Image (tube, one colour):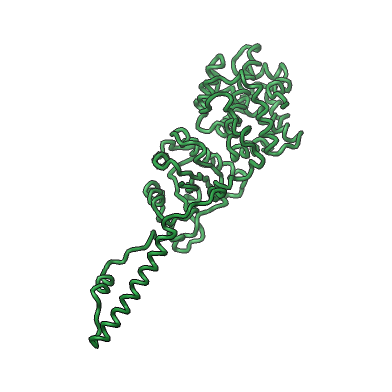
Length: 413
């Protein structure tokens, strides 16, 4: 049985630390324990929901093992002094954005209804660093890997059953308590830190059926070649008979007819970025889906703006996100991979975290628009996948192109 994190937090803080928390929340000292339990229950519920995907679980593991946030002694020291505790609010706010994403405001409102004094958001910001520090201590003491931490989080559900209100589940878009973190139980996370194969290369376990274009166009080319050969022979016979050059009516019609392609022209790799500009997302994606010959690695860049160095989206009503949701609704078999990219500046771990958060934000917005979770994955690529050289041969791509959210089609059937 997993250790009860609620009891562990109370024992680590003691009466003094819980009293400091109550004071920071403008609550009577006797309300401190109830507030602590509420805050931890909300945070753990958010983590279980975040861990519903392998990339989400891996992202949580990186947060927990970050030495800057997982130092339990320093976190406990903050609860010894009200001023120090309140000074940690920016740290808690940043963590809150990472765990709850676009649902922060809604979750904070629910927490406020559970806590006297309208201090719900304040509570979560104070408690979240404590939960991260406690989990970090568990990881180091028990030498946990990602799978071990996933199992530990699953074990916390039995302690949360009567502490997670239905309003919080609604805010997290979870249908009933038994579905909270259900993906961790039903699918397991033997290797959560690895991106899913289907997200990178499509559904490899499913053999793609033979398409119409795979046999029709080669056959058409052969027929045209035979037709041309027949006309040449016919022409030879005519010339031999008349002693002068002569074009058959069939040849004349064939030669004068406008040339028609026998399929879609494969995209020019060097000019793909220019052809698929961010101002033409919808039309380019629709054209791509109609094409017979599709490049599985083709990127479609979303026009989405984020605050510099963070995953705070500045335009959640992006027209391109709306267009993607509409296209996915029109094509119910379509699955996509959402990839976050940032400009390389040296700190690879930080870059990967931000790119993952941004991809998660876009995926979350699509979930809110009614797109099923199993039809899209979100992966942070960091700065590992810069844009290709331009047609001019420029080797240094523009930063605005590397700082992007891209969409790749994984499957259409």
